[in-house]
Image (cartoon, helix red, strand yellow):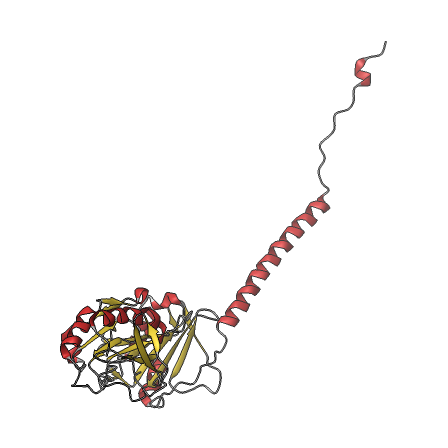
Length: 332
């Protein structure tokens, strides 16, 4: 009789990879790690090279850019403003300019020696950073996130232009530049006339009607543009003849309404009119350099109402103004 043990299968014995195989596996792993690290370092170098590459700067009138004070200001600016690093400017680099970049699309540009924009009036909202006061002017172009800030109490005038909506909510860039701008000559810049303040009045028009028009205008205009009405004392200090009303919003040009003014000399037989609600308007399309506001004149009412309204908010604002004019005036 055979022994069962004679027919038992031998148990498998544990095996190990030959030392050479283990060595090659380790080498492959190390090579993979080195490759990944090389890719990351290379990507970082490419990103930094692109981010810190020289940038082009568009022409902008700056009659005092060659002043010694501007040269000193540009030299005194820091190398970094928050997450932004100073970058070279493509030749020919204009005088009085410095540029900072966070990436290829988000930048800060500092210019010295510019003129104050037409938007700077007695109605303007300003921003303070220490001893420096700034006027904010936003680009009204749909989709644009440009904002420019002009010093109002220094000479030469400095303007800081930012791209990226995130920067418009922070005074960080202004605070950084203010340190250098503080050394400029303390000078209060002259304001420009408020829109419509120089329009001639028509004394033949009924003033009680105009009082009713001004009283009927709302305290806020423009929906999300957040225009708020200024008080009569502010209007008087700004040199706006009564009866009138005005609204302001930070970074935007003001909305101004005057009643009892002479009609536009451009209104001739056959002139194109625009109907807004129940009011026909003539729009003076001659826009001054640096402003997007147009002037509208009511037609066919028992008094002439003029409205200066920035083009980007005209559709909403003119409807609100028209409703007040229609409710308080009659037809001729």
